[in-house]
Amino acid sequence: MLSPTRPDHAEPTIARPRSHGFSGGQIAVLFAAFTLLISIPIWTHPLPPLSDYVNHLARMQVLATLDKNPRLAEFYMINWQVIPNLTMDFIVPWLARAGLNIYVAGQIYMVAMFALIMSGALALNRTLIGRWSTTPLFAFPILYNYVFLVGLMNYLFGIGIALWAMAGWVALRDRVWPWRYLLSAASVPLLFFCHLSALGVYGVGILSYEALRLWERRGEPWPARIAEFVCGGLPFLAAAPLLWASPTLGLAGNLYWEQRGKIDGLMYVIADYSDITAFLIVSVLGASIVWAVRHRVLRFHPLVYVLLLVGGIIYLALPRVMFDTYMTDQRVPVGIAFMIFACGDLELRRRLVRRGFMVVLIVLMAARLIEIDYNWTQLSDTTSQLRASVKRIAPGSKVFVAYSDRSMGDDVRDLGLVHAACMATIERSALVTTLFTVPGKQIVHVKPAYEDFADIHDGTPPSVAQLIVAAEQPQPGTPAFWLNWTKFDYLYVLFTEDDAPNPYPSHLKLVADGDRFQLYKIIKPGETTDRQPQYPGRYTVGQR
Image (cartoon, rainbow, N blue to C red; front, side, top):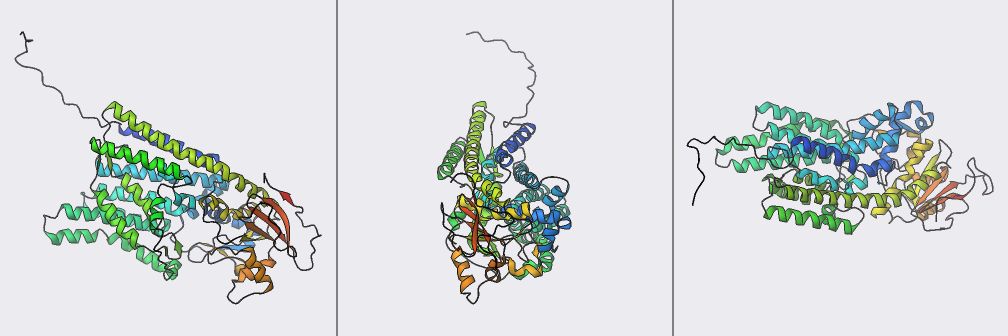
């Protein structure tokens, strides 16, 4: 057979860099687009049904307007202290003073929090893998996790800071040694003021990374390796004087371990309202990971295995309550999960694979967005009704919050109603018993004259039956604000049944009857049920 002639001296082939799929610029565009997309429910629901969020927002209103709102100034005061829970306190009031509505300021904070977390995951992935990868983008659907639904905003903002701080540590690890210590020493106080749990998640990340380095260099002399490993923890000493100066240290004795709930904490990473959606996300994501690993499209940095081991041990050892903070252990897996996504290395050189994984990501995001928007639209009806009922409250009033049954409020669909009465602080400059004013945990405090009119221990509101007992047959050990409930102006009863009867007609007059709540005017001594209050009349809010 004839063969084509070849030149004696062929031109050398120019080697081209191998593409792994998307360039850094393309990933930046995807990050921006997906951040806008995942934020749609936040922009379309000015007051999302998140548990603690509206309470925090009410505190932000106090911080932003106290100096020019005499009604709020009558009840509350600000006591700036070294407290590891101040992220929103620094950012949101500043936005509100700049002229933004407090609800818009809260929305901006949440979207910025999402962007900070996802950009931090991308940055950490870049420093671990050595190039930009799309793997962290698959963490977008878990931005809506149960911890977010509870409204732990300062902690989640701190997760974003922790991811960026860890990315900086990894990037500087093999460079001149002082820089990484200086960066970490600066990050520790910042994380402290976000939340102690966020600082703890950062500590888990650094401990895991340094443990991996210790293992990988096991052939070198051990004294130097151990010394370097121990020195990795030195920047965390910056938190010691802050904690010593903080009133939060006085809450250190409030510890509580709970054997049950550890599996729930793992589920909180992925589960929101629908088990079906959670199962779909886990199934699609799991199947995609298995396929990608088998076809050598997806690899993981060895850090992922150390994170799972170290994070798992610490998670099992953590108490449920620490420094009087609930869900101390159950909030940790969410932070670790974003670090795990940052450890993935997804190669998308083949166009078919690249398109396939983009379809998977879009399906996962669509499933999460549909779940969130559908449920928020339903739950926001109740929130809107309660907000409308707040207009019936006289400005500057004192509002007591009670439950129809103290066992209520734990279901995920009840979360949006738990602290919704705090809208009275925002809309009517009212004192509300459930507003977070715990010394050592917040800087907004109740003035001494009203300390017996607020829950300064962050407990569960009493049931209506307990209030009746407190009024007729007070028992020893009854909280002072329970005993004073008849001196309030209004009573919100949450989690009521349809057409629930007036539980105490001699002391209460129904003002508003909404979906799962009722607002009563408290009848003062000398008043009668026939007397018209300043904001009179009963009305039904919404469809019952």
